[in-house]
Each structure stands twice: as C-alpha cells, then as structure tokens.
Length: 585
Image 1 (cartoon, one colour):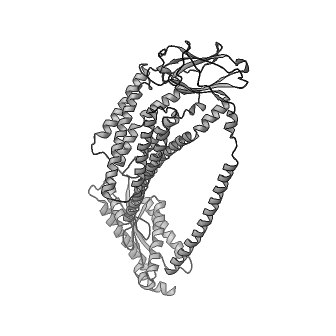
Image 2: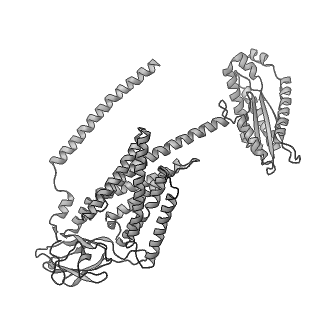
C-alpha cells in the first residue's frame, strides 16, 4: 500500500513539472504572437478593398427639395404605404471606374435610377409564404465613370405603416470592400449564432442516449429546441444569410416564425428543470402559443396581415415566457439560499439566468435609445451563456441519471445472474417458469432439463474450493454451450445443479441433441492428458404435456429432476470412484 502511494506521488510530481513546462511554452507562444501582431500591424485585406470608399448618407432629398430622413422613411409626411416616393442625390464629379452605390434597405420595395434610366431592381419572388416586404436587404448598384455628376434616384414604397423603413449604410465605392467589411463586422455575431445552433443540435443529440431509461426527462431536448429557435432568429437578424441566398423575403419569414417557436420549448424546459406549482401553467402557455401561431398563419395566408404585422402577438407570448423565466430565476435563487448547498451546477445555472436577464435589459435600453443596427447583439451573447450554462447543468443531471440507470441495470443483472458462472440464477429460473406457466397453452412445446455435477464435494474437500470452482465453471460452460446450440437457456439453481429450458418446436428431439452435445464435450475434455479435474455431469429432461390440463410446469421440473437422478445413479455405477480416480492422477 505504501509502495503504491509513493509511486502515485512520484508520478504526480513528475506531471506537475511537465505542466509547468507546457505553461511556459504556451506563455512564450502567446507573447510572441501578440508582439508580432502589435508591431507589424498593417492594412487588412478589408481595408485595402474599401480604400477610397466614401459615406454617401448625407444630402438626399425629396422631389420638392426637402431633406429626406433616410433612417426613418415611414415618418416623412409624404410617405404612405404602397405609394411611390423618390429620394434624390447627385453623384460626385470624380466618380471614377469600378464604383457602386451600396446600401441596406428595410421594409421597402424599391428601384434605383441613374439619370432617369433604371439601373437596378431587386428580383422579387412571389409566394404566399412570404411577407409583403423584401425584409432587410443589402444592395450594390453598379456605377460607371460616365455617371459622374449624374442624378441618382431611389424610388421606393413602404409596406407597413408603423414598422421602421429605412435606407442606411449608404456608401460609394468598391462593392467587394463593402461586402467583405460587412461580413468582417458581423463575424463575431454570426459565429456566436452558429455556435448557439451547434449547441442546440448537440443538446438534441445528447437527449437520445440520456433518455434510454425508464424515467425520461427531456430537459436537453427542450433546451436544444429553444436554442435552435433562438439561433435561427439571431442568424436571420445578422443580415448575413443574404450572401448565401438572395431570397431576403424568405429570411424575413424565417425570422418571424423562429420567434414563434421559442415559447413552447422554453416553458417545457422550465417545467422539466424546476417544475411549476400550478399545473395549468404549461398547458395554458403552450396552448396560447399554438393558438397564436395558428391565428398568425391564418391571417398571413388569408392576406389580411402577414407574419411581420402580427409580431406584436409574438412579442406578447415572448413576454409571458420572459415572466415565467424571471419567476424561475427567483424560485431557483430562493431554493439555493434555503438549501445552502454549495453546488457548482446551481451556480452555473445562476450565471446563465443572470446573463440572459442583463443582456435582455441592455438590448431593450439600446432599442429605445435608437440603436437599431443590431437589435440582438447582447441577447445573442446572453443566450449563448444561458444555453451553455444550463446545457452543462442539464447534461450533468442527465449523465447522472444515465449512470444511475446503468447501476440499476447492473444491480438487476446481479439479481438474476450467477456470479461465478455468468448464467441465470435460481431466481431467474423461477421467474422464467412463472412466465411460461401463463403462456404454456399458446406455445408449441416446453421442455425442462436438469443437470447435476458429480464429485463436487470430494473435489472441494480434498483438492480445495478453488478446484471446486474450476469444476463448476467448466461444467457450466459445457452445459450452456450445448443448450445454446439448440436455442435453450441455462440456469444455475444450486451449488452443483443446473437447469435448462427449451421452448418451441420438437423440444424432445432438441433435448436429446443437448444430451449428446454435452456428453461429447465431457468426453473430449476428459480425454486430454493430465487434466487436474474430471468433469462428470448427470442429465435428464421432461416435456410438458398439453393434453394434461392440470399439469403444471413445476410437475415437469420434478419429473426432469427424477430422471436426472436416475442418470446420476447409472453414471456412478460404472464410473471410477473419485477417490480412486484422483489418486491415480
């Protein structure tokens, strides 16, 4: 014991040295990279592509010469939904070649003209699935050197009366530079969304093995669905998916519908993780969410209000879910305080809950202060922390549940398995007989075989219990192998007794085949020179007779036992006595 402890300490000290060496290597590597990045910083490819691009947001005016509010087109007095309006600007005299008019539009239909000539019109796909507007869309209108000093006109129609409509991020210059710059600016947000989506899919996959047990808990499933719904909404809000598909109307529909998918998995998760004292909470909230989705869908396809116009209903459902989330935060906080249990996973959950609350509060404040460029920036971060924290906590709980299930299965196996030989024990045999007793009328045949190991007491007394165990294991292997070849099942029902059960067609012929197989196996084993033990097994069987209505399987078992003892007497009458056999060996 002391030697083992000394060796463990030696390995631990050795590994500590290696850890320190590796930490020094990592520290040097990071310092080298940071120094090189700071001292050799130059223009990035994005800066090079965007070199010469100028902001073109100021100076736009309406047809009457008044200034246009490009950030809030819907607020201008002359603007009404589906009534065409125009804004104008004059291109620079030194425009040059390879330039484009780059901008982002929101909730408008539009066309771009240069000197009265149509230069750009986005492709508009029509489908009842789509919302009425083009959603949020990046546009890059090609310009030429001869366009210098020309008038550029954007004719537009707003689609919604109250929703924000705008033309922003207006620049003149390289379209490639603007595209790369947009992708670069949104990389962190886009990566966060993808990570959130990956986390959600990982939780969905983890729910499958975690619930391969009797008592299922789908915390991981609900949290995964919640994460996927949030991730899809956030991905649509980054406005980068347009660079992978030009169908901006479909992306707006994705954004609206993914929001409607959030409340049900969130409420089911909160119920699975914490539980609601009021049993009506889950059915009411889930029913309201489903009804809201149905109503919005009917209005959308009927052409009355599209998904974007019914966002208020979706926001109400999200507000209800947020209230339940806040309630769960408070409830969880008090539960932790009352129990005073220092549980790291409870702390992780608290971090996740606080992160989503603070992030939501920050983004709400940003929204009302007019920061509309990225309305979900902090929510993305907060939700990612929330999902990772809660996912790790729920995963830990599921892993523990799986471990408990495996332990329970292991204990169950111990209860029905013989520890020495690995075959079924007496309990398993009795339960098998009880099961077959209820099925015997429907089965074509049932046979019970009995086996008894000869000479076990002599081997234990004179050669030791280790040799006795070897004898039992050897006999069990021979009997089990013979039974399994005829689709039978082997049980050890006593110290030196085994039983076999065969079910199905021609059980009598199969029992005779088993007796032949195990006798041949015994002869082969005993024929090997210098064997330390001799294997001798008596066997007999009886078959259930369906014509005898009162016959029980226990009667069949007793008949098999009698025939086995008859065979045992026959073997002893011709076999060398164990004392004489082992003296000669």
